[in-house]
Image (cartoon, rainbow, N blue to C red; front, side):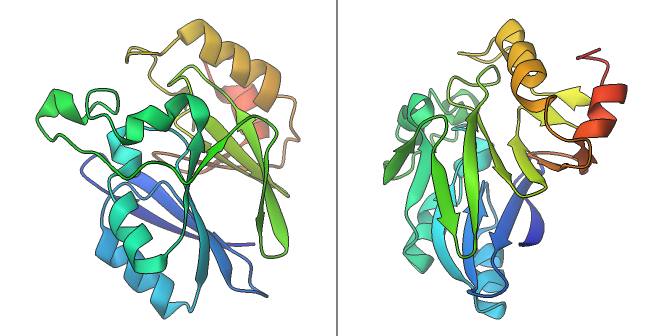
Length: 206
């Protein structure tokens, strides 16, 4: 797996393009803005996008869905519990800042345990609600894309509609912390980390 990280949008969302070096098939994870730049990267690297995956439905993670989908033809995947956020500006929180962002409906809704093939590797969908009802992480090999569930020495906010601090902490402790120390974590905002580092250093899960 090769990974390209691009910080996008006004809130500095990490968009990742994860691709198979052999087949050039790629997943675009959380295209939250800067659509033209993302499309340029995809074309420059001769990638074949097979899906756009939203780790959750907040506006800063979905804003470029439509443009990237139009340019690549890739279907949009999101967990079923956040699917309505794509088409509802109040639920994706853009309505609160006057943006009124909506996207096309999901082409596929995900559930916990789903497997998403990308060339020679697969993503396992791990449902980790708490930041949003349909928040997910994506695990493959020694890599975890954690969305806004887990950050470097921090966690996602839980004060948005549908959030739950207790639920988020429980999911992090029970579903992420048992993973191997060396697994690299690529969060929705901020720097990379590892499961081992977070188990020792994250003050929210001690």
